[in-house]
Length: 375
Ligand SMILES: C[S@@+](CC[C@H](N)C(=O)[O-])C[C@H]1O[C@@H](n2cnc3c(N)ncnc32)[C@H](O)[C@@H]1O
Image (cartoon, rainbow, N blue to C red; front, side, top):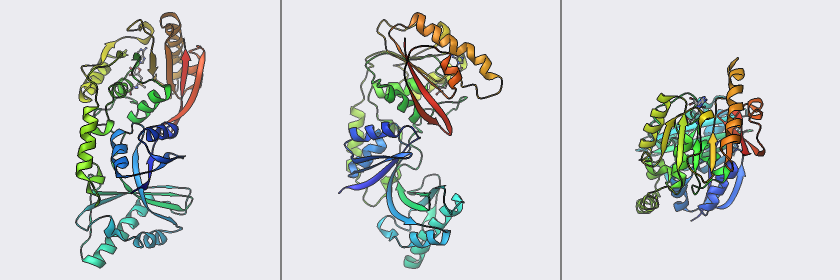
């Protein structure tokens, strides 16, 4: 049986997410703001949570209503027969985001949703679900924009970008889903070399390695809330996971290399790569980007996100770095494509290489641009 779903993502990634969904054989794929609507069967829901690299959540809407107050929200949620989705013995959590609506307190709105469900169960059975925001069995997402509310079962709960290989945070690490999206956007597919010469915690190189060896990003995750849904098909899920495990290639077709000026950061990247199961495949070194040289004769992709210079005074210091990136690329990397992700247009222009294209993406709330240059 086919069901309507909505996968959410960071703004800018929608076309890439739509492409990923089409590859997974989703139907009626439609790009929206911050996500993509699609239709498919249960296997597609499981494969989406397992395989999507650019998604944050995969939602299954169960209620759509126009609401102007918390009481109207409560009544609308009460009108759903919750016994079809859960039992009072299961744990519950509600996440909420509101935009341009009469309701303005997301925590209060989430509580009213929870109250409506618990009150319905209490009246009908004398028992009610317990709230567990850490590992809920039934996770719900309430999205209200312009007073139009959509309440959905959330197949992921913990954001899908949290792959589990990067427990320790460095200064300004790139979100994993965004890193994968940037790589997919360049068209890089693992068949040519990949270099990140300002690699920080190694996110771009590690996501690149997972793309190159065809490793499903959701394989590390032990639990998805859809495993507690009444229609959960355990044998289908196990078969899809086995298939995904078997699909992982043992070797890279081309080298993937990360370097950074800081030795401590390189150690961290190495640790993260090992946690991602890619430690034996990636090469790391400590090096100033201005001294970086191609790891092999065949040209490929250099991708990086240098510091943006958000703090006062920093931009001046960074001008040398961005100019240096342009100089080293021009002098030593003939035939390579350079993709530089930054929020700072003035600094990006200092790279001064022929621009292939510029594409906007959001890094959290910061509007950034991926600048693609050809040397
Ligand atoms: C914004 S961070 C990169 C974050 C990385 N993409 C991640 O996901 O963790 C920028 C990195 O550039 C490095 N860096 C700054 N100047 C450098 C230089 N001249 N050569 C090489 N790396 C440099 C910093 O040490 C820092 O790790």
